[in-house]
Amino acid sequence: MELLKQRIGRTVLYKTTNLNQEIGIADLYLKMEGLNPTGHMHDRIAYYLVKEAVQLGFKTIAVASLGQLGESLAFISERFGLSCRVVMPQGSLDRKKRWYQQNNVEIIEHGGNYSEAYHKSRELAAANNWYDANHGYDNCCITDNVFAEIAEEIVAKLQSSPKSLFCFLSNGALITGLHLGFRSLWRRGLVQRIPRLFVACASDDNPLYLAWKNRETRVKATRALNRYRGLSKNTVEYNIVDPQNVLNAVYDSGGAFVSVTTEEINEMIPRVKASENLKIAFRGAASLAACENALRQGLIESSDNGVVILEEGRNELNIRQLTEDDYENIEQLADYVDRYLGQYGDDRQSVLEAIRVALADGFVLGAYISGEMKGIAVVIKMPVGLVMPQYHLVYIGSDITAGSRGIGTRLMEMVRRLTDGRFSLHVDVENKKAIKLYEKMGLKKAYYRMIAIR
Image (cartoon, rainbow, N blue to C red):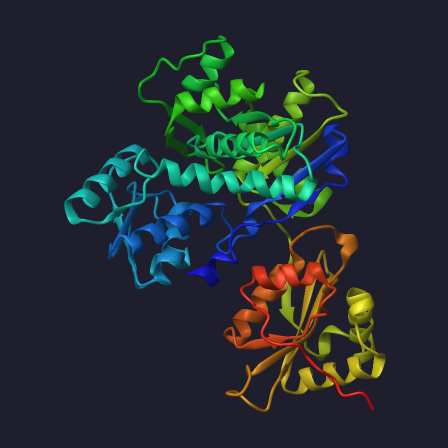
């Protein structure tokens, strides 16, 4: 379980180079949660829900989901031998999704909306002694603490709190978790202030938005729902887990609820693709639209720095195994190795030898953004398979001018997949950034490489 945990979280905080100028804010950072294993922020919470289910002795885990949390739970629970029961509203099942076909997954279609599926899932969990993984008071302490880690990751990268933080309302769990994380950092004296939390609402009729708009400190509704129309025009409905604490978090931070229209959200998705070559989904686009609206409404200043949580954000990166058709000659590949490894590369003849061996019995991967190679990995197959791993990753490097896009992480994921996790690598002891990446991918330091001096 710890090996899988290394791959979850600690996602890229990407500094925009064009979008910030379009919106009109000095520094804009994007938290790229789509770089988690299944491409969702929900991997963070799913890992700990499965961990608790295993520790408590449950054999089956149950959840109501429209897709993302269900996918994350299915992915993680399968790796630890748990059955997964996902309750979905009737007619919402997308049978093209591969995770629905996993052997440990059973889809139960019930009701006409998420709320009905949610209550059915909780009912089934109680009746069958299944672990109830639904968001709610049973696991809100886990959820808050897990999402609090995102705050710590942001501060670790920036070395301070951002002035503003933007995220989508969803069921409110992310907001309370982020607030807890920043308040904890403030209490420990690690930041001087907490960021102002700006919550994107894709509809302006939910009770939290109305309470904030009317300057009310109490949420009147005993059961708060968050409804909005997604990209498919279907109405999506969330049970807001702890509406009063969400409102408290926004007030405490000096933030606001920001209404955004479906048109603004739909327009933001291609804008981000054009300006930063990043792929984002509805909720991330809503958060970015809220940032732009907050500036327009005078809630933030153009000189501010801000962080936007992109729940599924990731770069448009294509990784493929190279063939002779992908390059003019072997020298061209060696040029990329030299360029992307810099001071940690080898002499030219060593690089050429490694590439020749990899192409003959192993593989070379290229990472492409807009058709341009931005990363490379060279892997050779060893003549042994027991005394050491069967494959050896000789070189891996990416274009640092492309910014923090998770290129190295994605290359490592592909290497792991193609080698079935049976590979080793050498790393310079001074290359701290590379060591951190490799440890995130589940590798550990096994021994020092000693070289005889001739």
